Amino acid sequence: MASIFTKIVKGDLPAFKIAEDENFLAFLDVFPLSKGHVLVIPKQEIDSIFDLSAESYANLWLFAKTTANALKMAIPCKRIGIAVIGLEVPHAHIHLIPLQTVEDINFSRPKLKVESDEMAVIAKKIIAEL
Image 1 (tube, rainbow, N blue to C red):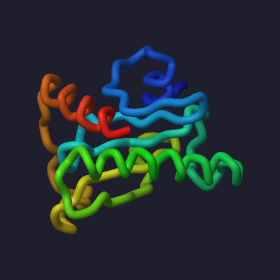
Image 2: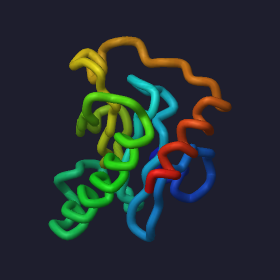
Image 3: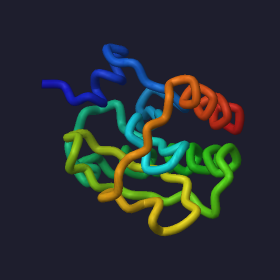
Image 4: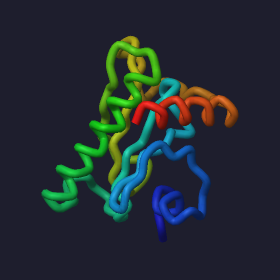
């Protein structure tokens, strides 16, 4: 069964897409820890980030770096935090999270509820910085 991320890649589920090329996709997390929380994924459905080929692994991080730089310019924050956990969705992904404090990357705290209109504005701000 296809992961929720594969369904987003195929266009079966909507997403606030930030960046995309033939191999990778970045989009806003619908359950963000902070406003502007982005997920970066390979389009290839693979469970663990370490199961990617060396080339895909390196290119995923380069794609994430470009996205993180745009995110930092678009969303006022002290730093962009990075997390690779991979327990909730069986599809390799990198979390890029705008941080003001270390608590902003605490995955055990309640997620934010951000309305669709605001998500669209956030996405446009990030896209404008790419």
